[in-house]
Length: 285
Image (cartoon, rainbow, N blue to C red):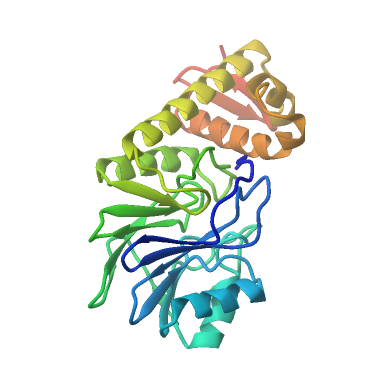
């Protein structure tokens, strides 16, 4: 992701029984920091305790001011779940989510005691949280629907003010676009992202992200047609001319995700890590 840090309050009450606590890990990739959400007043569910920062975990326990019973991870990237195991040891809470997939940039310390599948619900006297499997940014990514408010807590599926990196092989552009459409079809009242502020116009934002991705895909195809036989590194400057060069390594990962999708669609071919335009029959044009 390429969100510039901005100022957010450390602690915000979003509605009765829903609070946001900002982790102190701002950066170009995390924006203001990772949002940790707390649900409930008498018994607390924590969503995305963030990186393993002892001061932040102690702050979660202090802010909760009640027993932390459940810890949920939207996915197992290093800025979302590494604090979960430590927080569970501090509180005795149950860990909920999906196990870490294979690959780099995954938190292998997150081992859920309850695996959440699509449609599973954490139900208490105070709230109901429904898991929505939204692969794309990560294969084990979950969004969480807070039923009483019709708010969707989006982790890194949708963030405030920017787009997210789709990093193959675990990241998948086709799955990401399908998951975006699925969240839009839920018609949520708001999106509560893993980075940045509340999004109050979900349909417009999701439509913009889908349009942005498809426009980028057109640039990818045009670049392949203009310079057949190029590598991903060679294609980046043409496709991401609007992105600072120091972000090219991350841009190249999303570029690869677009190329893989186009190859799956039968539009281009990969020959020895070089990309060529193709027709449906598989013949190079």
